[in-house]
Image (cartoon, rainbow, N blue to C red):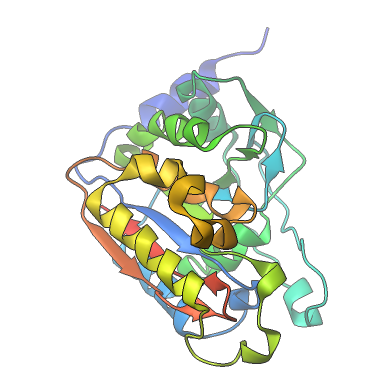
Amino acid sequence: MTSLQPFYDWSKELKEEDIKLPTLFIGHGSPMNGIENNEFSQTWKNFGKEIPKPKAVLVISAHWLTNGTKITAMENPKTIHDFGGFPQALFDVQYPAKGDPKLAIETSKLITSTQVELDHEWGLDHGTWTVVKHMYPDADIPVLQLSIDFNKPAQYHYDLAKQLASLRKKGVLLIGSGNMVHNLRMIAWDKLNESNYGYDWAIEMNSIFKDKIQSGDVKSLIAYEKLGTAAQLAIPTPDHYFPLLYNLGLQDENDAIRFFNDKSVGGSLTMTSVKIG
């Protein structure tokens, strides 16, 4: 029989703090943001200094889609280069942050709506490391990922996130990593270097998303398919949108809302991000 002592030890270590950490939804955009010093990565770097140093980081990335829900539970998660066609310098990046098997167990116990599988195969995909390496370049904070069960609807993900809210007062920084508006099929490749270039529908939808987040209209954000043609163009598939619902599920009524990196890229993608709390 497996000893539960590590779980109990971590539970004691993971005491409630006087300060509740914020939760971040980060539009991660191109993997190149992982090695470029630009306005987006600079903002991520600044958050690493602004936010109280967490005991661990837990990321819900648009790039880990699974059947069922999984959490990374290995001691040393690998750096995953899940992309193609980029410079070798990007493939050479290694982000050697430790994992935290005890925190993985603790987190899995918090989720009662489904069984969470402890995963030892995945690692840190580019939705995670391209952002976190700017925030914590020394890789001295454990980093875990929670997968997205792509067979489940939006409401499921929002409800699951609520079960993780207590981690915010226990020193765990929870990050959703995706993009609110994300339609790669309609990217204007010739406009990628044009600052803040967005199609009319992308700008419209980005504004609607911000208004509904600010006003607390979570029901409309969960039922995003009903928000019209612009929403259908902005979210042709929900993989990059679902991480936002995790952040909304972690929100409480007293949390302040702050938008950042509020820019369009290539017409059909927005980097718009939000700090909750």
